[in-house]
Image (cartoon, rainbow, N blue to C red; front, side, top):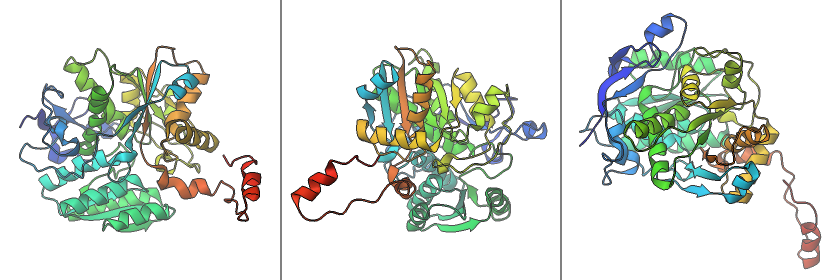
Length: 417
């Protein structure tokens, strides 16, 4: 079995390299300088296409690019192989050559977090963990709970008291113990103590300032790049990703960078972060290249990406790919984009996911695209997960008398947007 993984983690900022058993929590050297930076898995040169193993389950056909040992059994639920749907209507609307919607709602728990959880939980098993722990208000927790159940591990989800009841029930359905804490930082404090005291394996970040998730699961997102390379006839010029701490954005970029290094593509796409609150957009506008200053938390329909803090890995990914960050994105823009995706493409996107199209529309209005651009919009999760929040903005479904005339009268009125 081919693997490119060296067993080491490295810092892209200062170059520090450590064992993968000592890299959770970010780069200590940069942290001591007041710059919180995530570590990422280190790989020897390898070819992600030539090393693909079709017999492996789910995304593990690409396991040569994951930070797991060759003899470790994959924890898979058949994730990946999600559709890449072309939309001429959206291409015309945005004034570009093509638009592809990468629909991650087809994953086992209906979100792209399954790619992260599959690799991270496999790594937890490799390390001999009995319990995994995650701080999450939604998809991250649900995916971790599902893959922990598959692996036979205990799962503890630390969440917020305001979390969606639907999300909590999905986590609990897989057997996770879900506990709410008063604030977001409270979750990290308790999680850090549990990791250090009990040896629980972390599937999400747990330190403040944040650096992103532990490095293992992030590599699972590279499979999106590898799939797009197989599904499309050309390399997209830009990929728009709903972003909080930049795990997905960074993982996809790393996948395309490995394809470039192996000679399969001439260059990487521009990585564009779509943000609810505009954390990274504001940092980049102010000229910050290392640290993302916290901004004021605001309520947003994009609840799974409504973070007022950002990460160095997001700034680095945007900078290294010549991309950008777009935000803040309003609730009205999110709802419009969600409706457009459903009606023009047939994809019901979570409110957070709809930010990819909302960001594309803003950039199109600003003249940021060229008519030859080929865009990929990442739909990270199913709209069913945010249906309660969206339904609260709609009028009630009309009830009519059982006559054709009453039906026609209602249908003649303006439909609820």
